[in-house]
Image (cartoon, rainbow, N blue to C red; front, side, top):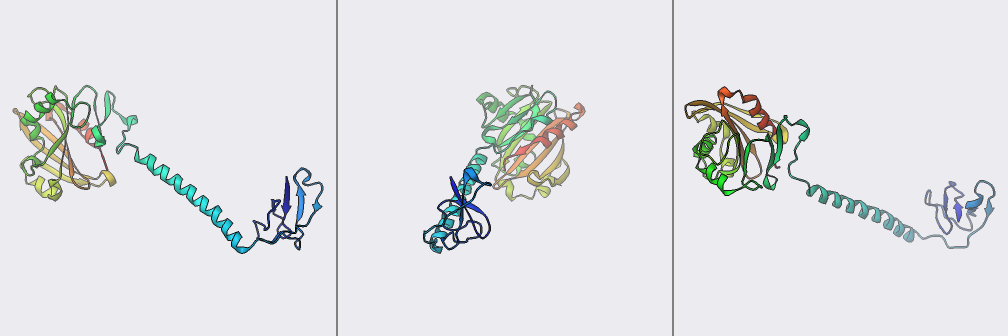
Length: 271
């Protein structure tokens, strides 16, 4: 295959080119561009002249449009593919590498959230694989679970229970020694969290924890259930149209406060 050598800059082009792609010099008979045979490059240079007409500026512009326009379309298509792929990823993802021994990372139904819990606990998920009717009825009928949602259960009427996990069997009406609740409410978006929480007699501490996408309110409640002192820790997360409440409750004498914080810190709400 023969190649053209530009007399101006020395750039090698393809036989048939009318202008140098490097400097734009016309490869015409006047320029007397040197044709170098590919098989003899570096050994013998044979001079030829071309009688072709010089490439017009309009045609040169058209070729540039085709080249750069095609490249732009290629990268635009690649970007669309990447956005599509990212859109197929779960809304929340779990971090199995940091799990406490004997715990698991649970991804709730419809990717509402992810949370880390002991594997031997009993679960109920309103939108997941463990959304059976028996557990749902038992959870709704158990007054101790509603107590964990204080003060919100008495302020809004659209609190939807999404998830319950307990150390004991959820199908019973007994108060579990340790349990976790996740609920959501649109009406809570209109509430002042600090004022509402501090208005409850069970509240001991209210603080806001700024953690970028996982920023939340943390509320500590002290209450008595069946004659035993219990503590409930709540995280309140803001989303676009609602608030998510995560509550971890346990008997204070059980020494579970450290693990309760671990559960709350593992919670990953959907964006």
